[in-house]
Length: 148
Length: 122
Image 1: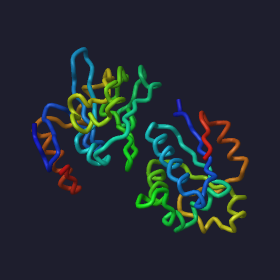
Image 2: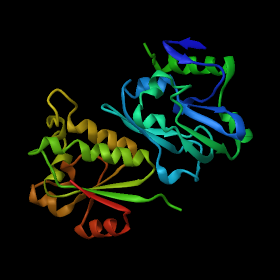
Image 3: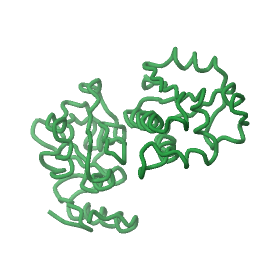
Image 4: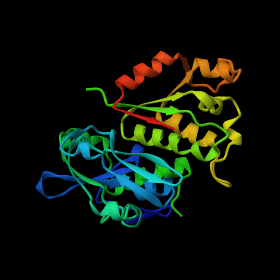
């Protein structure tokens, strides 16, 4: 687990840097997705809601398109899908406590699970491991963003 | 298939500041949900589009001015349409309005309403 500029950035997930979201293959050929600690910081640090559009369950959401929405008192915006895939389920725990996505963004605060449509092709657009964290660090430094 | 479109009709204006944040917030939210979002400004809503005016309207004391909510909505990709007749009501010309606003007649509102999945009025 790496901490970069105050941001918790683990090496074992795949990041779509431009959108501050992560993906991680799990059992059953599924990919779990969520927002990074940086996204939580940019959203204002205290969330009012994270909502996955019910109509999208069972539908394919394209990479970069809105998978869910984040609301805080200061911010409203999409959680873009890190990879294209059929939306299998949303994390029910977020309805009661959206701030799990802030306090435990890579664990209990995951946002959705998808069945990827083209993981091998799209994973190239994602970064992971030590190199991925280094790339994220470079982006944060270039943009002057920190989580402190 | 194109994403669903929604229409928000904005009639509230600077006389009712507390009614002037949520419509823009809902518009930004709908855009984040991948809806095509149109906001149609008429009656006093059009006044909020007058250059410089929304900077002076605060839905909550100490909070953000309406102009910040407007900018968030524009940044999210919300389409702003102003009713031509309502600009005449307030003696405004198209040049008096902020950039990014399209002037349309009332018939456009009916067409947008017919095409929209949902219509909200504030």
